Image (cartoon, rainbow, N blue to C red; front, top):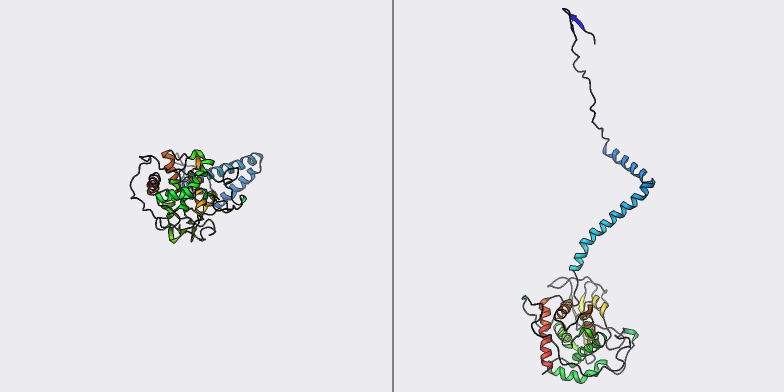
Length: 335
């Protein structure tokens, strides 16, 4: 650009419009398109992962993410599982004892725990193997009737007082005697088993069934489907209908109304016929006793007794009905 002089003064002509000189901005950053940036980042990450430092770091980061995801899932699922614990039985087979009104209950009974006249007959020799509890088919069938027949005279006497069929009293009393040998610290009384048997099925008489002299309830007592209706639990079939004849939902079964999964866990063979039969009150009463005594419970302690009954069926009105019935049996048996 040249300067001219006008009257001796140097004049610089003005720059032409439209030709502004662009000065680059020092901090401007040109960003590539998003797709190109992603491809570039992926290539850089892959190249870094092939280096020694990347080979050590990538598995560690992956493992850390996996542990965090597992912990998060556990925080959600474990509490839900604990809250969804299942009781043993469900009262769906027309119980013969009306449950009391739903009122707040004192978790500790105000009076002594229910007990009854103790069975006095000794256990028959060879009633169970030398190791303790019957083990099912390994025991093999026995001859000469039910092992609990040794309590027949006692059962006749007590049954008349408490108005329970003698065949049922035998089963309850025999379970008490067996547990006195195999789990003495539990201190289970037959009156508790009898009360559960009454509330659950009227001692094997619910749904038109009849308890035979062999302790078996026929026709088989099977409760309503546990489909979530009518206040019942919802339990999808677990035994393919093998025990409860229902391949859609589980149903409570037998005089003591066991849920199939619980029976598969705790079922017993009290009469040594080689079968663990939930429809046989001998087997069902012993299994119920085993369940009530789980976890080192001492049923002569009020807190343990209530916890045991609520573990069988987690309904406080149910537990109160069992207590009232057991107490009535205990008082009547001692008259």
